[in-house]
Image 1 (cartoon, rainbow, N blue to C red):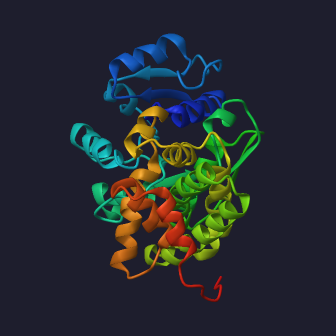
Image 2: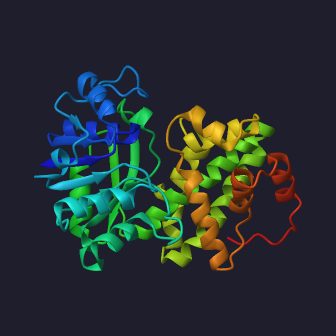
Image 3: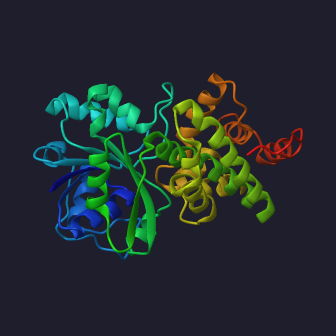
Length: 333
């Protein structure tokens, strides 16, 4: 199949390599012409040194080259950029009538939409069966090396779930189907906020006890708030919830964890983001999740603390102290 791949970050680079190795024609689009030329000439990502992508993959900054003739579109831009990219495709090429597989993890600010809801809002509800997602505990740095990885695919459409499974499955990239599209996407989005909190905790104290508490209470916030997005809470016990939470909170590959750790070490949130040099989805999603919590009158203290650190200048030590001095209540699971 011809795959139009939107986004040339490390995750897009790794997944495009899988698709090409599975025999598909892959054209990767990035908005930056200079960056596209570098990738096209080297077939090596600047952030994944030493790993060459399948030489059949093509890179371009011409959107038409990726979209025209494509039988599937795969997205790995950013959660904040999805609406503009697909709106642009709609304007240039008319109604999209091919499957769209989303891999970005986030919730749109203002609307509170999960990524599939953003696409349905652009294309119309009648086209929702075209939308699917791939999510779960996975770092590009390991996937590109064919290290064992297990993730989840989901869609409103069972036939699309089957297609995603067939497109991406390899002996080392194991995919589990899951029909709860909203739950799969919600877990992948909100865990990034908890990872920032864990990075801050490690940077301040290095306490495994504190990090375990943050991850557990963070998962509780995720399960509690997911109900407002018509998710199944049990989905968050799986790979796209607990699994992704673990890998994002515990790994040095995690940009969200690294952001938190840098902030604890004295960097401003913007300075930490610039040092990482790639998109840090938890920054954007923290705003969206806080909006959802307040709109639905649900207390989400870990998310609120991260928001105040990122956007209101709260000292991380004060945030930790405030969390630790909250009134103790019976644990509800």
